[in-house]
Amino acid sequence: MFPNARTSEILAELAAQPTERVSVSDIVAVLRDRAFALLVVLLGLPNCLPMPPPIPLICGLLLALVALQIIFGRPTPWLPQTLLNRSIARADVERAVARALPIFQKLERFSRPRLTFLEDTPLAMRLMGVILLVMALGLLFAPPFIGQIPLGLAVCLVGLGLVERDGVVVMGGLVIGLFGLTLSLGFVYAILSGLESVF
Image (cartoon, rainbow, N blue to C red):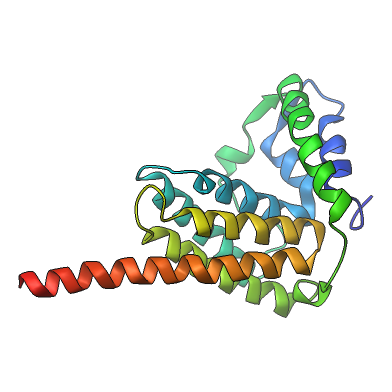
C-alpha cells in the first residue's frame, strides 16, 4: 500500500497489527516514509494553542532533532532503542486511530498531490529539513504564551503537506512560518535592545 496510500489507510493498517501489543518500532515500520511528516505534525500541534514555557522549547528542540535527521537523509527517524522497544496495547492504538481518522479523512477530501517537486527528491526533502530547522529555532525564541502560535500552525501545515504530498499546503505553512519567524526575530531584537539600554 506504500507509497501512494492515503494517511487514513496507513493509520488503519497500524490499528490492524495482529498482536496484542504494538511496539514503537512496529509503529515506525508501518508509518515508513510518513513517519517524519507525522512527527512534524505532532510537534507542531501543542504550539497551536497558548502554551506556557517550556513546552515551545521542548517542541522546538525535538523538532530540531527531527529536522537534522531529514537534512542528513535518514530514511526513518532515529529513536533510542529503549524507546523503540516500548510497546502499547493494541486496544489503545485502535482508540487513538479511531479519533485521528476523521480528521485525516476530512483533510484528504481537499488535499491531493500538488507541487510534488517540493518533496519528491532527496534534495527537496533536505531543503524542507533546513526550513523546519529554522522554524524549530524560531520556536525556541518565540514570545511566551501566544507568540509560538503562528509557528505552531506553520509546522503543522508543512507536516500535513508532507504527509499528503500537497505542495500547496506546504507553501501555506511556509507563508505563515515567515510571519512567525518575523515575530520571533522582533521579540529577540526587543530583548537585546532592552539589555543594551540597561547596560
